[in-house]
Length: 224
Ligand code: DC
Image (cartoon, rainbow, N blue to C red; front, top):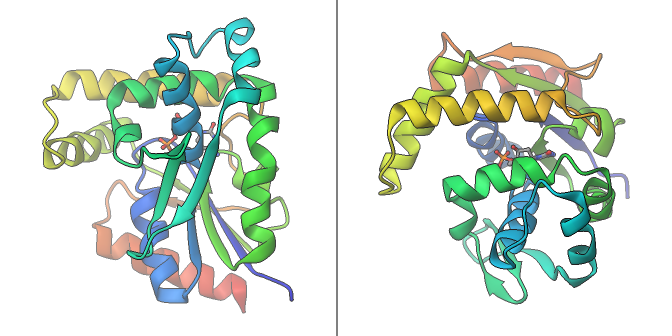
């Protein structure tokens, strides 16, 4: 059976996961959050006391990384590291930075590629990340590049972290967003960039609901 795939790429905080989850529910597709996979490896490096930005230290870790993803009864993607459910732990801000650093290493990207493509071979998927439309699923049936200004993205991320009960300052969140943008777009291995055939959607001036309606229309047109 041929499965359909939808790729959503864009910078941190553009609303990819919120939009992808809602689209997945609306279309009956499986939502795959690829950032969570990089975050789990980033967490592993931190737990081992390894600098996630140092290729020489990270490479020997790869064969030891026991990373699994599974869908719970709640229907959500859970991440496991050595059998332990780390789904919540990988959302910590220091893990965001570790994931961004470790993901710039080409061998890390190769190591995690099969896991992502496998999901699309066995399911109708909506996958979000940085290189889904360009590298992971270049033949995706629909591709979206979701963006918003760094200020709008920092505001949303700040509100989200507060809601999760984390103690953070807006200035730090904004600074992290700029730093991650520079790293995710500036790396040589599969940098964040819009695929030529991706539809650009800027959510800066749109509410969640408006953005969702735009995306749903766009995807439905592409799938037709
Ligand atoms: O989507 P996210 O913020 O959870 O991703 C965390 C980091 O992982 C992000 O800063 C860059 C990296 N990443 C990547 O390089 N490629 C992907 N497909 C997904 C995430």
